[in-house]
Length: 161
Image 1 (cartoon, rainbow, N blue to C red):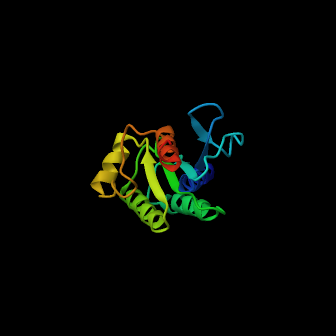
Image 2 (image 1 turned 120 degrees about the vertical axis):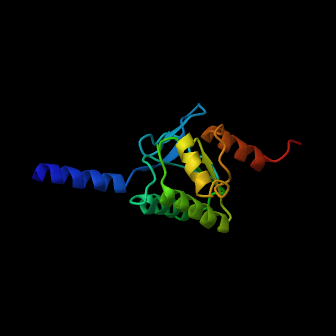
């Protein structure tokens, strides 16, 4: 009985503090993965890419929000774009959707664009239902992390001379 209770407490603790990966480009590819696990992954100048590795629920949304906002604010030069890769979370509840909207509002107020990419259909539907789909730059099911980064880099480069 004690072992079961300890296991449940540890499970809840882990679920309430999910890993939020800072992604970097895998060298010589168009793919991105966790820079914490693969330090050779390349950071993209002016861009920060995050991937929460759990569903976004009322009991973990503050941790996810604080992790993203604190990392962005901790940069010596603020990024121009924050990409939120939602390919991992299988679901987002009402509170998690509202949190994404508030993060978008906060970053936008600081002059930072937020773009959500690769969200599953259930996540996109929840964001639509909660009325926050447009706030994080709109959510297109066809846009990938690489697409968002390429688009950003093309816009920053400006028209060819």
